[in-house]
Image (tube, rainbow, N blue to C red; front, side, top):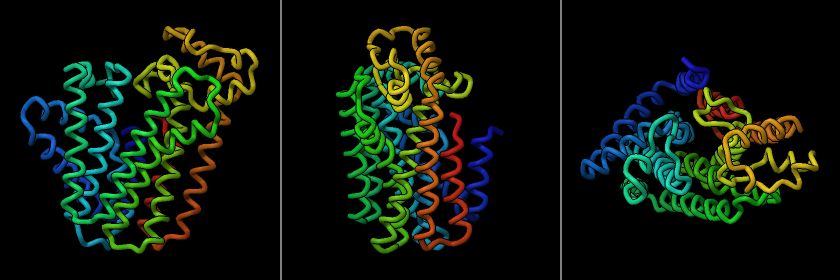
Length: 329
């Protein structure tokens, strides 16, 4: 068992017996939803969902709801909807990046081409909102709609910033919030909404999710520069080759005059990207980026004090924050 799997297992264990049961039902629902739209789309949608990772976002829905939430069908629908949105964004990102692999598996774009990949992502988006509509909560639909709009806005900002090594930290952080943190926020809001919490508590849950989502993205960008392919499944500097400038390079440019004058467009091969990653690492920028992310995680954990939580629920959410801080892939 990997360290990530061990951490997830511990989170599920301390959260209570209802969590593994509900996660299993969410998984079953995702399979059913993927299979219900013809063999071609079902195959590719199913493959995308199966390769979706650790189910962090559905888990947050369940943890925010807590063990006292009685509306299990609504929780399952909300958790499935969040994961469908996440899967849809992965498919569309792979189209934009012309990515042949995701987590070591051929992407929909690589297997079926652009049109099929776009259709698969669109299907997943539509199924997410159909699933959430069944919950009957306008507030829940609004939460997920805001997050989905933010995803699109963040992608547009990232495209506008392509190859721009001089992008400001504030602009970079805004991209991270829009593209990643807002869906974490929505996951926590949805769980709290289904559990019938008041607006103040819903907002606090959302703030916790937004913080750990932001830290998650910062550390993901550190991994792109620092992580070996054996752990991340991709070569170092993949973002740099795509023209995506992230926090490690932004900070390294402040410390290395040569990097400040670098034209990112000149980095065109994996070997050049590897060399740039090593140069970034030598500036200490990776440690600085990690420190910033860990500060955000610490703030998120402190915010749990303002939430009405049962002991297992509080411990599980704290462990989620720890897992984000300790992520290696």
